[in-house]
Length: 145
Image (cartoon, rainbow, N blue to C red; front, top):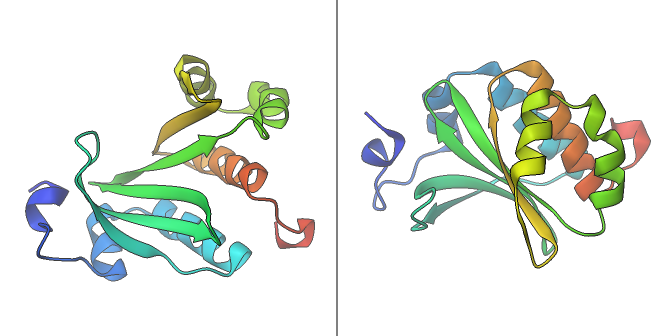
């Protein structure tokens, strides 16, 4: 069954339910990184958005969105918004990123100066690049990396 069929609007999943459904260590690695680095907890919310409806996991630091995670079977998708403040730094690092991330970045259009990257996290290299993107988006102390 698909995620949105198992967990309907009236059946909110727990963080454990989400982890079990995804069934991929890359999930735990990212959530632990975010929670320990930014000292925040996940917010499980239901979205009616036609592009990615159903329960998702949001991470916010104050009013700033860090990312939104969408569960899939054996992988997950991470939405990271790249604003005009981050563009220069990200474009300098772009050649070091996985080809998939490079192509996704280049093919994503900009809406009001922001790129909305929907990244399917399917391997460790993508995850590591994602951590860099998040760290650029929301600055952290270098001793926490």
